[in-house]
Image (cartoon, rainbow, N blue to C red; front, top):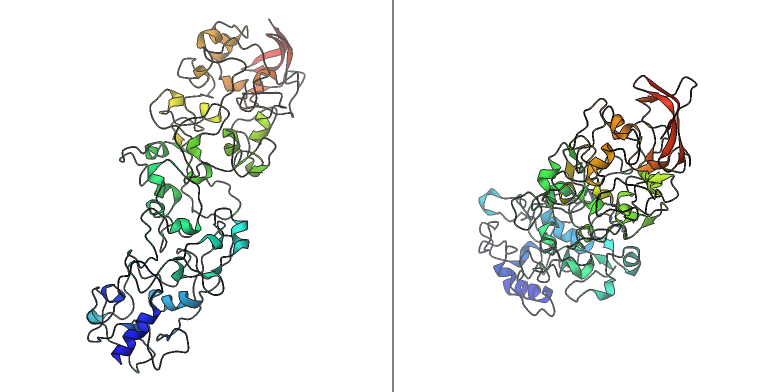
Length: 531
């Protein structure tokens, strides 16, 4: 009987494997002589825990265990185009032990269960205990065919799978696509060595990265019982996973944790697979495609290689698979799909940032195209009216390069609202100084402003009120007026009010000239002109 059992196991072994480690020497040997912590009290047969030549179940191949019931929580994610159902085939056979619902010694060929040592009945808690919640495990029992690969460019066509990675007769991916229960030569019963993620990349084509810490899938992912759920990450959230390296203690990895601890962080530590819509959800992977990140920089308006091949929304409001320009990444959240009320109440209200920067706008900071004003004497050396800037020139960490520091680049978090690289005070009656409007003074020369080189009363105004009282930093969309909203003028209506005739307006009269109709700080400008 025992000899026959060994013949059965030999028949079930891989047909052509270059390297094989006998199941006898692996944790799947549950006999009393097994090498693992989980083993029988006295049973000396090895294969009987899964197979029997006689009195087995009708399930092939000579299956000797009870089939678990269909009561699993199934993997589901917006990242997967397939729709897995309840486990089938070989996966269900694996789960007869690994879901922890059926005693390990409960075999069909015996009238009583095989007794296990140490009082163990079902598989103990640990990496091998998957439970009945499979939503945090790599998906199984779904059809992996050319149609699926065509719908998801990050999956390889199944015709390209190496011989070690096999699908079942129904073209379904099962546990046995990655695991060989009889051969543990590579550890974890994997069908091939995954030291350089070659098992993962047998199916997944994620692109390439030059970031060393991102080159191995296992650095961020775990295929079973993942704390994050469907994204199979090693921590509960994307940020938590990223911060295992980017916490300031790992050489060569930027310290992002410090920026995220600032009062104005960009990360919300939301679930990895949130429901739609995405309001109030921001994650590292909204801006970074970690599998394709690169080092280096890009000239404005190009997208930084450190963002990787990330998707975006273009200047027309259409989604793009891979962003070309930095602003396209920002427009994913700060444009049509997630419009919000402006930070400051304005005369012309525009809650779509994309339209504020559009070249058809009345005036704007030059994110997409050079500005419309040919006369900006306050620009510092290195900047001209033909220059372009990026969102990151203004938004980012106060300790990053854009703010004059040595910390990491990026819009991770800041001490200045709203995630600005330097202070931009919007308070009224604030004393003017290099620190009050430090953001503006990064590009605009303070002496030029105080010397009234572009506006005769600049110095007088900014000693009593913020730059933001008159200027709308992003821009004024085509909703504005071609004569009333040039030079980024769009009054803060919480401080600037209509004149005695009910008129609240700036009129552009040409180069360095204009007329105001308003009341501000109890001062009426009923047609006040300059120069």
